[in-house]
Structure formats: C-alpha cells, structure tokens
Image (cartoon, rainbow, N blue to C red; front, top):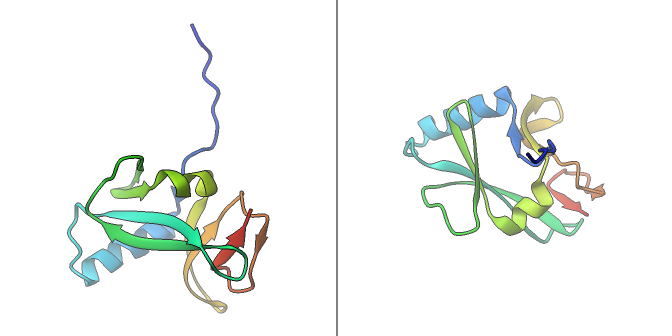
Length: 117
C-alpha cells in the first residue's frame, strides 16, 4: 500500500469570487456549462500576466477543478505557475476586481496584474 502525500496543488476560489463569477455569467448570458478559464501569459511589468475568461471547451493538457458549481479550467503551462493559487474578489477602496493570491509569485507589480517567479 502506497502512502499518499497531500500537496496543495489545486487552484482554489473564495466564496466572494464564486458569487461574482456567477453574477457575471448571469448578467452576460454566458451558458451555464461554460467554465472559468484561468491562465498566464508572458508580459506585464513583472514578466507574466494573469488571464481570466469563460470557455466551453476543454483541451488536451487542461486541469479541471470544481467548487460550488463553478468549474475552473487551467492549461498545463499555466498550472505550473498557478498551482496553490487562491482566486479572490475585492470590492474595497483600492479598486474592484479579481485578486490572485499566488504563492509562486516572487515579485509582483503595483497594480497586482503581473508577477514573476
């Protein structure tokens, strides 16, 4: 019998972010079976930028998570950089929007939209 080691490798989403994703889907008539696709791409002042969108297709190499009726899809390359990330939503005095709490980011820019590892 092999012992399984628990590693935080999933991407999590807070209740506040779930509520906002559901609201955006409803307000924009996005089909209920579409998932939230999270990714990264090169660019930004710190080297990489986060991407969010809705997608109805699962591609080879994608990882899928689900929480409270929200399906999250991450491509393999992005998953390497996003493993352990918590997606939150902020509507405070410093602005309104999704916030990536990424334990892999060693540097971030002032706006919080780009990061480096």
